[in-house]
Length: 455
Image 1: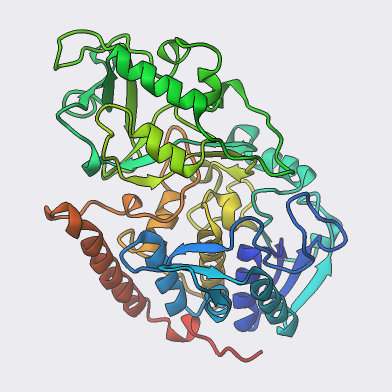
Image 2 (image 1 turned 45 degrees about the vertical axis):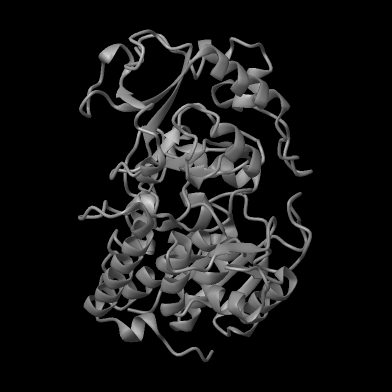
């Protein structure tokens, strides 16, 4: 049987990484990219793999989830990481790049790949005639997917499984909470999935709430990009926007205290901020109803005014922005294909991973798994104990409210041993490195994972 023909829609980070790896394995790829003929409001360059916002790829330390993911991608021969390392600029412990040089490098790599045919085209439908003749279609169009293609994707997966606006609340590490203040309970004692209740709760006295409220009103907010409209849906209003409606709006909304008793006083608090487990291991918590457009510095300052969060460590800060993504656990198979159309795959941020590196990692993984199938075998999923495996597991795990996530230790299984707070990250990293090494060895796919780089 002759190899399949692959269409990759989108020349961003995931699309380029996926196309390059497929081509390196000898497979024919058509890369459809609408630039430079049609530029979205977010893009300014005709180059592929353009870094739209920051030029930072975040921490490069191996004791961070994102640092581990980078190390794993380097071990898998990632073009994205090779270009990033070649064009790094001083950024302390982070990996930042010269964004123009990086994009030029990735564009050159694609142009040099004989098996990649680059076509300038705006793909608006999964039935676009230009996709015909390709047995496999990969949509890697990113968070600002063209409106027409977004609508076609929503139709394919079901509108309830496709989202066009992203409201993200901050996530804090559970071990950093002051449990002498925070108490576990569900409203009116219902839904006791955990001993005492499903939620952790931060109770406010009146003066504490009023100080928090005034800080929200005066806080510095992120200035929206020119291509982002200040449009908020009622169900995902920023907490600071709700606060502007009046001093008691929050206490009748996301911070309402009814149904709770503060164990310290035996009385109902003036307000309650609830924390919901973000991951199955319970090591990270989401600040319920606290989606926000505050700057990161202001989020750290103001949310640490919440009783019990004075020393909170943030696994992720909140944000609100345009972001097209699907409810991956419902819409996608574990192989990242649409359940309704098995020959159509998604890669990158449109799957529900968040961040430059995570997007490229998703494209890399999809290419490796597709190459394995061309060779008549299945590449086993990386274990959830390593960064790549944990990120992919996030896309397979059904939750009530699916949200994009970047790579962090909270996605990994809980440590099987008690450890001091200062040692936890190192233990997660050590376990991840060992798990990733075992997976590579067990996969027995050296030729697959490290094909010749020559085109």
